Length: 107
Image 1: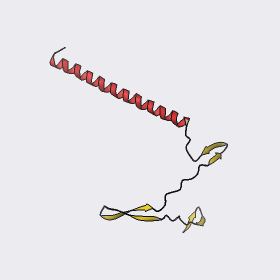
Image 2: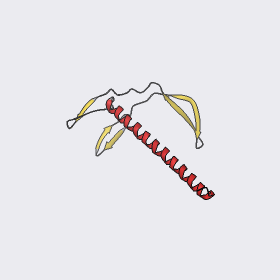
Image 3: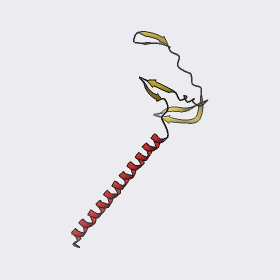
Image 4: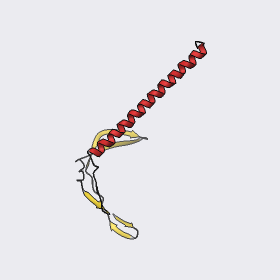
């Protein structure tokens, strides 16, 4: 396939992906739909250490202490939000009890 980008023409041959037809079929908006499965699984790219303007980075996310610290921070935020929500529910119930007691004439 011949393509042109900013005046420069080049040939592009998209990679061919080998697929098999699945037995699973369906209909979408009145048209038959078939699912396709890959014949062989995708190959993951190996990790590469790169440098851009003197700053090192990798095409894989870092793991270890940084991730566990972030995960701990997320857990702490979730715990705090849950506690706040439970306290709000408790306060709402308490105010409803007081309001009901005033309406009934207990207080």
